[in-house]
Image 1 (cartoon, rainbow, N blue to C red):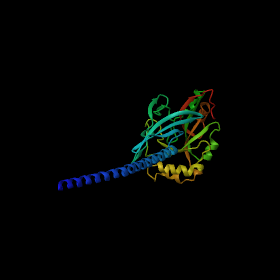
Image 2 (image 1 turned 135 degrees about the vertical axis):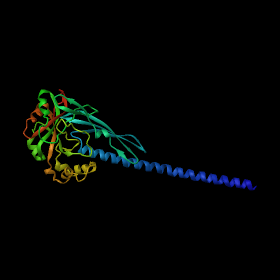
Image 3 (image 1 turned 90 degrees about the vertical axis):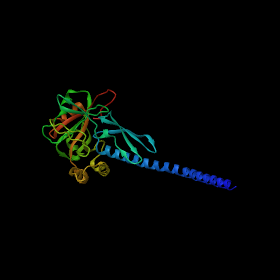
Image 4 (image 1 turned 30 degrees about the vertical axis):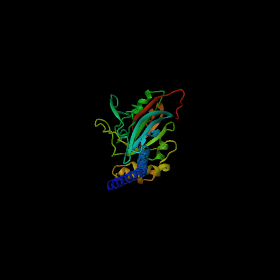
Length: 302
C-alpha cells in the first residue's frame, strides 16, 4: 500500500510539473514572440531611419523608386531599396540595394559605400560606373586647376539628355547659383564636402584627385538650403560617423543656410545646353554622368 501511495504521489508531482511547464510555455512563448517582434521592429525602424539619412545627404541626384521589407520575421529581415536618376524628366534605373537587420543590429548594404567599377578611357583616363546599372558616374574633383572638362564632348552627342557634375572655381551660395547657372538647365544637387569615413574610391595619382564620397543636398523642385536646413542637418548628424570636429562638417552644421558655400552641383538638361556650361567662367572642371537618347514621346523638362 505504501508503494502505491508513493507512486501516486510521484505521478501527481509529475502531472503538476507538466502542468506548470505547459502554463509556462503558454505564457512565455507568446511573450517571447512579442519581445522578438518588438526588437526586430526597432532594428528595422532604425535601419529605415539610417537609409533615409544616407539618401538625404550622400546620393547626388538619386531618387528612391521603392523601399520595402522582405523576408521579415521575428529574427530579422531585409530592406530592399531601388533607386533611379531623374535626367531632365527621363527616369533612369540606378541601383538596387539590400540592407539587413536582426533583433540586435542593422547593416546598410556595403554597395552603398563602394558602388563603382572602374575602367580607363583613352580620352579622359580613369572613369567610374555604377555596378548595378553600369551607368557612368558624374564625379566632383578636389582642387580647381587643370581639371577635366568632359561637358565639352556633349556637343558631339546631339538629341540626348544628360547630367554633369560641375566643380566650381570657388564656393558659391545658393543665391549666387541661381543667378549664375543657365535657366535652361535643371539644378539637381549641391556638393558641400566629402565623407572621409566612407571613402570608396581611391582616386588615381596620375589624374586630378576625385572628390570621394561627396556630401551635399538636393536643390531641385524648389528645395533650398533654408527650407530644408533643420531636416538636412538632423540627417547629416545621424549619418555622419567621421570625426565630429571635422571642419567641413562643423561648417555645414553651423553656417547659416543662406551662407552655405557649394563646391559644385549636378545639372541636368539637353546635351546641347550642358555642353555650353563647359566654357563658363565659374567652372573649374566638369564630369559627364548618365546620358539618355531623347524619345519623341518624352519632352525634356528643360
